[in-house]
Image 1 (cartoon, protein in one colour):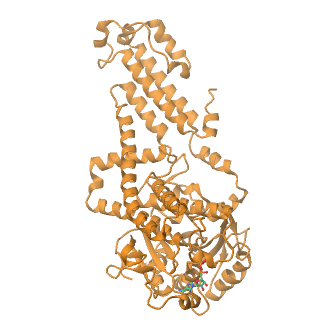
Image 2 (cartoon, helix red, strand yellow):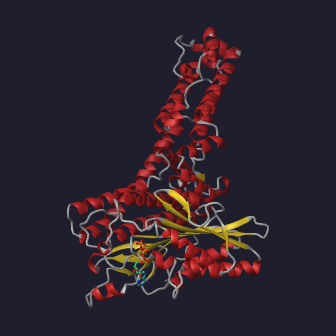
Image 3 (tube, protein in one colour):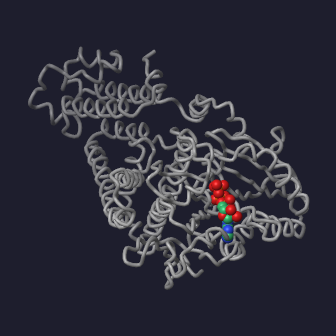
Length: 564
Ligand SMILES: Nc1ncnc2c1ncn2[C@@H]1O[C@H](COP(=O)(O)OP(=O)(O)OP(=O)(O)O)[C@@H](O)[C@H]1O
């Protein structure tokens, strides 16, 4: 595999599984393969017959005949080397059911998988440089994390590959067999001799999924006797979207990365994004499988977002004022739509379109060609949408430009109020260390105490109601200060100015002086701004802030708003 040689911290690659004997026997001689790797750059995967090819570009695609060794050398070895330089990382294999994930990750006795190959090298290097290696094996089922090995100590030290295989395969498999539909994770911790953690590598085998619930498709899934229950399909698909949202946010260099939306992404938080490296391996069934097309369509979208950011960086567009303004406003737009990057909803739209096609009985060939055309449409429209959202926020921002001291105060407060990326649970991509969620805490989360998130959030930053009160206090102080100056005193009714400092905030924001200002007072009221103008400006800003807050606040935030 050649593929793209991008210097990205996140690589998105594909692997086409080889045929099983049964599949090979069932193939018509001379029939075209359903999925192929394009010969040229080896980074494009093609679905369907040559006439109606649907293509997706990734960082690289491993063909059917390329083994686990090839994936190891190109995509896992650098992560292992990085781990001994303090670089944490994640390797995530995902794909539809029966797409060969287990075979790639765990392998067989004869052909060891990526996990075993990596552990061999890690243990060898650790002995050389005198580091300690310990592992945690976990499963995520229904958004609950379980420690497979040792629920008390969470980490089991390993010194040799035999020891590792005993712990991982013999002990681990006993339990994992009872949970066939789960995300299986192996966390390898590398510590110094004094026991301090230096880096970790996460290997995740994502649960096999079924994106489509239509029995219309005569695809590979039919060979699986047990269909997936809809409850399982729901939680697995939800976590797939959560993971891809995180990948897309990292790829797009968003400030807010929605790690907290899912247990798995929380566990991976300190080894995915920020300064950590990551590889996403999309596994493909070699026979027709609509889920595989769906997966490649969404991962290639993440790839393009990532690539676009890299191109922008090269062209130094990102240093331009326009880019900065757009980027900053887009981040606020992202916060505004509940922390979900806007572009990802385009993915959902695509799925909805595909699903509708299938329900209407449109043949598969038609659907695949529709996918390729609608893909471009959704991509463009999602960018447009994102930018128009950005512009809305930009307009909102420009409307509170600092004309006077009062407005400056309110603008600062506006940013303070809306800078919720951290209080919302999001962690800036470059600051993972701020709030590490290691497996210890993940297993504690088994209790599924959703309020814990909110409480933790409260520990780190003051509640929103407190911030609003701060805004109110600073406004009152400013109003009082301007009221106490002789010019201001002349420009307004003294009695009213006195009252202003005493009225509660929720009354103050809707209050406006009823007595018209004398015509000559504008020259005396500082900066040519009358009290009425300032008051109206303050009122508008506050009303806008309040409406924004009421529209986006959670139930808990609304409850905490009670004015004491
Ligand atoms: N490279 C390969 N060549 C031939 N057969 C393979 C290859 N990889 C996997 N298989 C076969 O394909 C089938 C599915 O593989 P595997 O169990 O690894 O898929 P999976 O994605 O882990 O499935 P699930 O999500 O259901 O757990 C198995 O029968 C396996 O033996």
